[in-house]
Image (cartoon, rainbow, N blue to C red):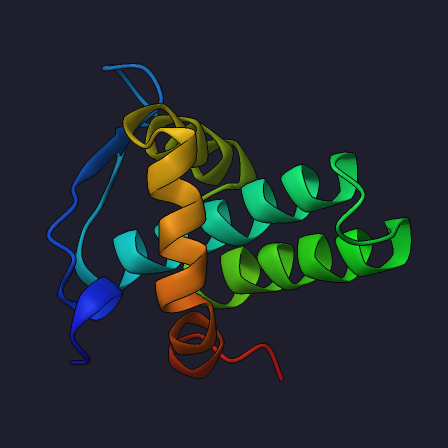
Length: 112
């Protein structure tokens, strides 16, 4: 595993405590963190004029492909897990993650 996101020891329980609960750890948790980082940064950059709508849409499409290709579970479970990841990171931490790990995310979680 690579240093940084690959060594992430994040465990996420998505969904209600009854049926539908899903736990993510290791590579899947790292993929969720990458997806969150890319999506958040895309929206932040577009809203501040740093990138255009097309570039934002491409980054969001990459986020979806990471979730589809590298994270198990239902779409509802994945979205719930993303909310948890988002809530655990503040704006500065997320943007720092993007600067440090965006290239690693794309290499670690290829979309093609």
